[in-house]
Figure (cartoon, rainbow, N blue to C red):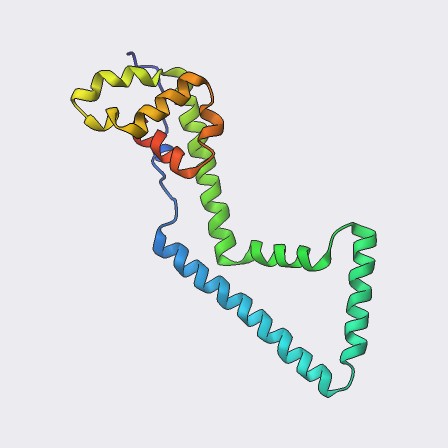
Length: 166
């Protein structure tokens, strides 16, 4: 095997920058806190509007606005608003960041596997017995079938491929 011309971005293929478990938990707690805060603010606003005896008028105007928005834009306003809020929450930001890292990693690993036959790694099985592990053999089988790209859509399968390559 000749690897002299193989250019590899090791940081992309080793999950560098991917969020850790505790970071995801913190982001989840912060996101739930934001959603609870928004719900509480809406509840307080509803109580105040009911106290002013204009709650029904505000609800009617809100529903009319949602209907107009749906007719003009073809989108349900509450779904659009909740997606925008999810996009701005800590969990949404972390998810987008992780998705970018995983996509970059997929590109890098697919570039490597297009240049290298993973079956050639079996020669190193005596040095590193992990190469002959079940997961590695499954990766090699998917490369020989030609369906490696759809198969690594799952993060666990992507990790198996990264472990075999590196």
